[in-house]
Image 1: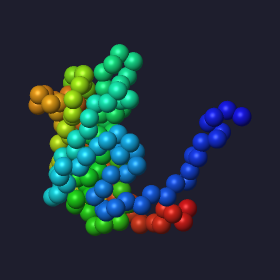
Image 2: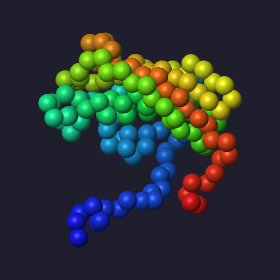
Image 3: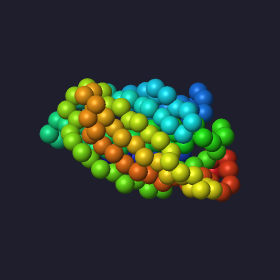
Image 4: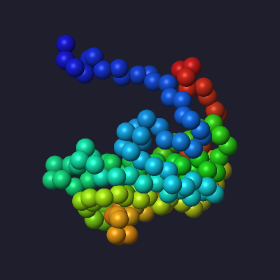
Length: 150
């Protein structure tokens, strides 16, 4: 039997400390919420060796995870606790490589029409240079459902 057949693949139950809190994956990436209020959020994340891609720069997927999480926290700051929503699209642009230090995501929800939200995020390196930007769309679930019962 190979190892992938031994891994606990879910379903998993997750209980967060509060409505605006990091999930297990985000903790794995050592993200930190600096602020999240009024449709805006600022999150930080270090560039650790484990987040490197093959030539030693920060993996774009790790930066994307920070950006998406920052946007999700901005969304949460606008919605009642327990509201289910999800990212439906991300349009990303990688501007320059991250080689060291901490990165900071500045996210803002720019529009909400009924169940649809639109946001933008810029990720900066320690020198204040934009390394990544994206726009995203989110959808609020039509009905709130008990995911733990599924």
